[in-house]
Image (cartoon, rainbow, N blue to C red; front, side, top):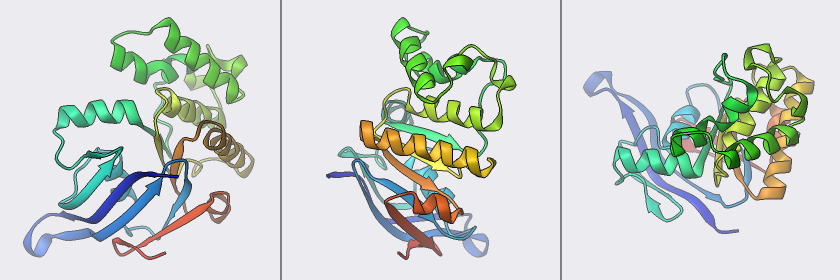
Length: 225
């Protein structure tokens, strides 16, 4: 495997002076292409801030962030938006689906934003992903009519729509029952194995963490294990 993401000495501070909150304190981390890693640590340890920076949604106060050989700290907002749409997928604890859209429309949305319209190729890719997620019979259902587990599987399909090299998942099974959670993780593992997509999954669930091949522990703003 080769390095996909490298961050070095990441610092993130919110506020100034006596009101400053130091969230990341010189964190360094390398993710190899094709990894499936769990991100662990107590609340307030910096996990969500790290994911936000890795997803190019926020820049660090200092430090380096390189992905696919590109310096993402130096990149401007327009370049980051393009990079994010092409190379990074997101899955959140709250699926963030558009309730009036069908499952397929939600999945195709990232490509429609990039292309300015829904294309036949995008719809075909969306149908393929939803079928793979076991939702072939729910493709045209409004997302509001889906169960929690089904919505999260739609969210995983949406994250994979543009064939990103990296998928960042923030507590993706936090609102699911055990059976639905493990089903989602089995699908993620399958995609990781078959397509080589790199996953970094933030979780408090020991069973979810154990299903990943690598566990990365964050504490007090640095990697501790």
